[in-house]
Structures are given as structure tokens and as C-alpha cells.
Amino acid sequence: MAWFGSVFALAVLAGSLASYAFHARAHYEGIDRALIVAVRAVTRDGAGESHFTHIAGQQGVALVLRVYENGRIQARTPGEAAPDVDPRAILARPAGPAYGFIPALAPSVVRRPQAGGTFGIIYDGKQRWRVYVERGGIGSAAGAAGNGAGPYDFSGGNGGTTAGTNGNGYVVAMAPLGPLDNSMAEYRVVLTGVGLGGSLVAILGIWLVAGRALSPIARLTETARAIAASRDLSRRVTATGRDELGLLATTFNEMLDSIETAYRLQQRFVADASHELRAPLTAILGNLDLLRRRRDIPEEERQEALEEAQREAARLSRLVADLLALARADAGMPLVLRPLDLDAVVLEAFKEARALSADHEFVLEPFEPVRVAGDGDRLKQLLLILLDNAIKYTPSGGRITVGLRGDGDRAEITVRDTGVGIPPEDLPHVFERFYRADPARSRDPGGTGLGLPIARWIVEQHEGDITLESEPGRGTTVRVLLPRTA
Ligand code: ADP
Image (tube, rainbow, N blue to C red; front, side):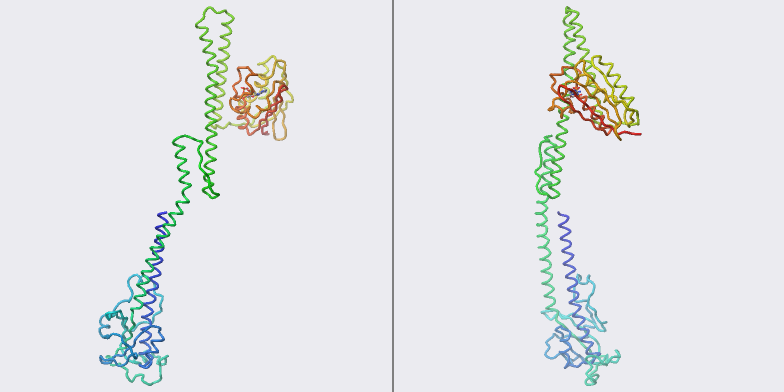
């Protein structure tokens, strides 16, 4: 604002100065020009006294003409009352321009004839007079100019009769500068007033407008600072208007929404992770404590306690591995994808899963060779997660069907089971971290609620798609689509 105000004030100042300089110089030079032309009308064209008023009238300036001969006024504009002037004094001490140093800075815009005489300035006690003196008399320069026939050549007549070519003659033209001096003084006052007043009004206006325009930014800054100090991400700025600042405020709020969501998810993740880690630890510690304190417990109970501790330790280990996998995923480390035979990966995972459970019927159908660009270890992990879920949530005797086929530019993997299924209200949440549908129904301690989130991350890294269909009591089908390569 200060910058703009200064620039504006400078521009006004420069404009005022330029306007004044051009104006003043043009007016003062106009007078000089009129004086030269008038004197020339006398010396060159030979205009006599009876034409002095006419010459003055033609120049549009209240000028007075005098012809001096031997120190006496020989002819003059009728009725003039200009102050006395000594032409020799003017010639002896020529004056500079009638204007000051500021108009001198402006270029001249008046076309002035070459002055053969001398300019002077005299002061009569009331005002300044501009005086122009040329040596000679009426018609004295006619021959020299080689151009006797001019607008004031009144043919012979008095031409040359009073010609003062003997060196004692002077033709003098004078014009009062008072009116122009006054007018210029007034002009200076007006320009100064307008310049100062204009600058002041402009600065005031800019200040008001800038204050209003910038207040949303001030509010934004305040809110950002308050959030930084309090870490209260629920605060928002009030967005007003549809202009850039309104848009900025809206975007700022959207950014806060996104940060708040991420922050809450992170908080929940840490809380859930701690909670999940504590459960197996409590079980292990409880069993160890039991074994240490009571030496007389039956062998059967002792075995049970040991087995539970082992199971929980295994679960803890799985949980830590899963958390590590998700932490890597969150850190944004991209997988390295290489062309591979997806059928080999699927077959390997299928065999491993089949070895884990003797209580289920395993079917591999359809099974086609398909190549994809992928990370073999991760794809196997994906299949094991899906197969592990199928085993966990399918009662003994159920069937688990794995399928692989190429479909156009896609590879499709399906893992289908005839298990308990997922209630429709849980279906949208199963990809959330630590989410488990109805924990009561699956008392299996193996679940961590992290399997499907990891599975989805692996699929996303392969630019694929994973969907889950389920019918409670009848079974679940997971379908994974991956881009195929040659
Ligand atoms: P978990 O370790 O508990 O299996 P997941 O993220 O793999 O965690 O799965 C989340 C939840 O989705 C499970 O707790 C379970 O309720 C449900 N779910 C996943 N797969 C199946 C399935 N094949 N059949 C029934 N429910 C399933």
C-alpha cells in the first residue's frame, strides 16, 4: 500500500510539474515571439507609428512599440503608458528567459524567429515587463532582409524617411508580464493543492480498500496461527464471496478437512494398534504368570497354558509383521514390478493354503497361464491373505475355490468360499484397518483386521482392482483384477 501510495504521489507530482513546465514555457515564449515579430514588422516591413496598434493587435499580446532616435522616443504605440526604458541599458545587460528553472526543463514548443536583438526584463514597481530591443529604425532592415514587400510594406511612404541607420536608433517592443506572472502563480497553487489533495485522497482510499480486501487474509493467518498453537484441527475460516480470497478460504478449509481426517485416522490407527498389541501380550503374560506361580497344576492345564501363550505369541508376531507392511505402505515406497507368470504364484499360494487346512475342500478352477507385471512376493502375500480369510471364515467341510484367467487385457483372480459370509452393513468397512465384522462370530484369534487393508494396498500398487461380494451364510467371493502384460 505504501509502495503504491508513493508511486501514485510521485506520478501526480511528475504530472503536475510537467504540466506546469510546458504551460509556463509556452506562454512566456509566446510573448517573446510576439515581441520579435512586432519589432520585425517595424524594422523589416517598415510599419510606421500609425500601424503600431494594428501590429500589437495581430500578436494577441498587449504589447507596446517604441522607436528611439538619439535618445528620444520618435514613434510609439498611441496612448501607451509603459514604463520608461533605456534601450542601451537593455543591450548592455541582456536578461535570460522570463520563466524560472522548472519551465526551462520542458522542451520548447513555440517556433520563434531568430532574434536579432536583445531581451531584457524591467520592473516598474507593480509588475515585470518583458522588453525586446533591436538596433535600427522603421524599415531599417528592409534591404538587409531583401524582402521589403511584407505585410507592413505600405509602399514607400514613411519607409526609410525616419530610418535610424546611423546607430542611434532602436526599435523596442514591451509587454507587461504581470497578468501571466499572476496566472502562473495561481496555477502553481492549484497544482500543488490538487497534487497534495489527490495524493492524500488516493492514499486514504487505497488504505481503506486494501484494509477491506486484505482482512480475509488476516483472518486466515489468525486461524492458521491458532491451529498451529492449539493443534485444534476442527477450526475453520469463514469463507465469504466468490472471488480469489473466498476461493483461498474454501481451499484452506478443504485442506484442513483433509488433514483432520488423516490425523484422526492416524490417531485411531495408533490407538487400535496399541490395543491390538496389548491383547496377546496380556494373554502371554497371564499364562506365564500362571505357570510360574503354580507348580502343582495338572499336566493337561499346563500344556494348555503353554499352547495359548504360543498361539498369542504367533498372533503378536503376525500383527507386528502386518503393521510393518502397512507402515511401509504409508511411507509410500513403491513396489518394483517385473513381468512374471501369475499362474506360478497362484499355484504356490494355493498349495501352501491347502497344506494349512485338512478340513476344507480346495479347488483350482479355472486355471490359465497369465502374465502380469508385478512383485511376486507381494502377489503371493495377497493370495495368502485372501486364502487365510477363506479358511478362517469357512466352517469345516466347506469348499474354497481359487480361479485364475485372462480376460482381455486383464488377469482375473477369484477366491470363493462357502463360509459364513459378511453382513451387508459390514461389507463397506472390511477394507478399513482393524475392522472386523462381528468379532463375536469369529472367535479365531488369528484375525488382525489388517489383512484386507494390506491386500488392497498390494492391488493398488499393481494398478488393479479388488472387490468383495458376500452373502451371509452362503459364502464370499473376492475378485482381483490386474493389468496383463505380454
Ligand atoms: P482379519 O484379520 O480379521 O481377517 P481382514 O482385514 O482380512 O482382517 O478382514 C476384515 C474382516 O472382514 C474380517 O474380520 C471378517 O469379518 C471379514 N472377512 C474377510 N474375509 C472374509 C471371508 N472370506 N468370509 C467372511 N468374512 C470375511
